[in-house]
Length: 160
Image (cartoon, rainbow, N blue to C red; front, side, top):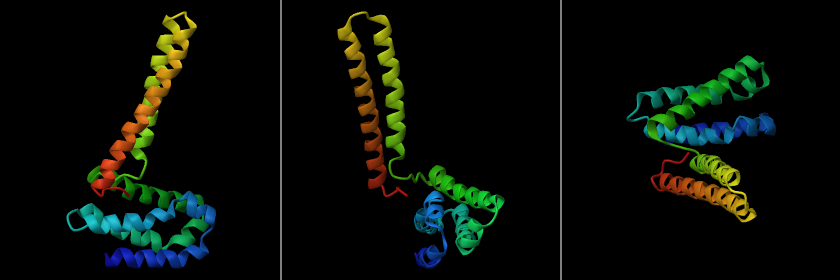
């Protein structure tokens, strides 16, 4: 973990030169986590070894890259997203709330379909209230399912 700690300290020294809006917009707070995970998986994965080099180059060039033109910012984002995507696909690491958001969306879609079906095929006002209840149940159920999966990932220590 020596490399990750070194890069985290280097990032902390460069934070003063970076705009707070850029810091939040480019999720620079995730860099120490990405560095730690890349070092952790670097012993078994060649892509993580190359990701360590990419992260080093990104952190070394940080303030200058964010102050320059859009092309350099796009390259910065592209490389950062490639590291995140590799950790996500190859090692199963996810950011907190990833599956909770997906579960909420899935619950919303299924709830809307169920509510629309009930609303269209019934004429009584009692059933119209049932449609809203079904929407709420699917939404809460999807969110709960996503939170459950997020907790399982957290217990396996695969959360970014």
